[in-house]
Image 1 (tube, rainbow, N blue to C red):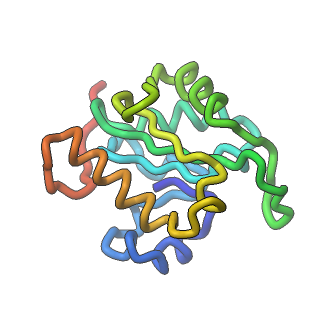
Image 2: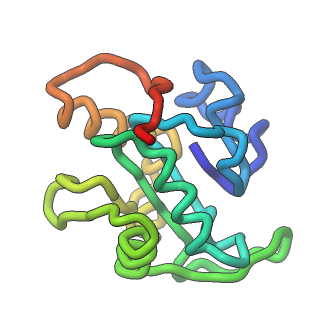
Length: 160
């Protein structure tokens, strides 16, 4: 998971308690090296970096071929004064940024592509939509796409 939140916050979130700290990065993917993942969650990250199109390319590189990038960004939320806050993205803008940066494809109506998006106002309209639920939903989509595989998020070597 890539987030703008401190890792200590992530480990207070039930869905992430079983995963080691090295599976989370804050506003950077450099610590992952050439590793690739089945599922990558990018939550409110691009809004907080000066050059989001560069980070989008780096994020996309951490998605294993056939994997899933699950992205959410701030859109209509108020600015956050406690940290750098540069951009706002609609879901259409995210599709463009990730596609132009890396060729990732999003297909409406079923998450058949590699990019799945969370509506920025989903949490407001559905208070039950927590980070735990987002992670579980992303994992369920991945399992369905991979014929019910119960494999957890795992390391895999990226094709060179």
